[in-house]
Length: 507
Image (cartoon, rainbow, N blue to C red):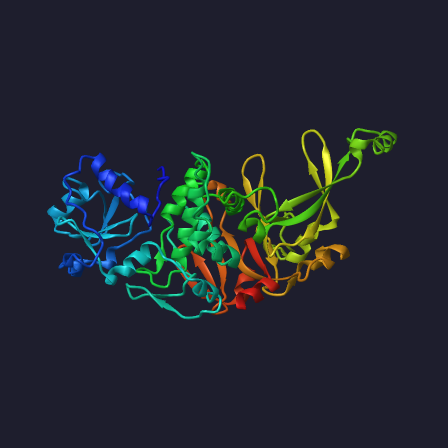
């Protein structure tokens, strides 16, 4: 479904637009709107406030009229939780009020309450918790204290939860998106930036470009995940997923299982574009947080059919000389060794293990990797010159062959804390870094078979800094786990935090 380009909430122009919508639809006979002041006691003494049912209110879904499916001038019935368009005579909200006897409505754009069919505006502070759940907001002090706050929150339905460690609903097959959202929600610069809507509210995009919608929906999702005053201890990423489908042109859907690495790569670049980021380093919060630099050395190999003399002569040609290119990166992809074809001496299956440090040697500038195409072969070396504040490492587990996608189940061993990536740097590059030691904050795991066949599931291990505890999250299921259990799973994506960044969050 398409999204409204004009959800300009809390603005005076939005309120005027609300009135114009009713006039344009022929609802000019609506009751005259009274000014918002204390001169109208009816506004402050509505007799129907006790009919509001907060248990049925759910603002996670797309703001569409349940009858006309329009996104313009939508009101939420606070008695049954359904959405209806308009509030003048003969509108869907007005009709619902008369037929069902539901009288209290909230305009989802202007955040103003009305009593129907009487038509007056309700002015009371007792409904502030409802508007806060529709649009949570955070002060600078609250954001700063998030990484040190260990208090449990109590939802309206009585369930307790830790803000930031909240399950995401799996609509059908969107678990590969959920784990990415959960992991990014615990990256401090990303979280702090998107919790303040004013950071990106004024960003303008070309007409027809929906990337700004993706940015806005991601900000809304993070604010809901860290909300301490929720009605329910879970979140449905419905609007976020609708934005993903729209902006990716249906490349990523929530009805078909996808790949988390491919989605994370697309999502980071799409959000960077939506924030008007450029190719310059630090042009958006995405680049400031995740972008590093490396030198890529490439050398073309002579064809195998050449003789030794021909290869020797060809090596002097310019096209066979080694070249170097400085390349930015947002993610480092490690290659697993092939799985053993034969069982061990006891005829038992072998589950191979390999240290993450061994896989990372791919980026030390010494180890060579041959890349073949149907035309020629090239040997490449990767040398990291700059490590980002937050390092994303992906492990290539899926290989395409002629008939199917094969998964490599090798277990990767790694420490949870104090992993020094500085050993990959040259002595000169290491001098430019004040700190090269990282701690793990998120570990995304793929279980089961290859995802391209619609099989397999995703889950994520997250570190909640306020409690210093690890949690395993798979859709709506949230469980505390021991740190030792994290390394036993088939890690797919890891997010590492540089220790000097961790000290900033505690300051």
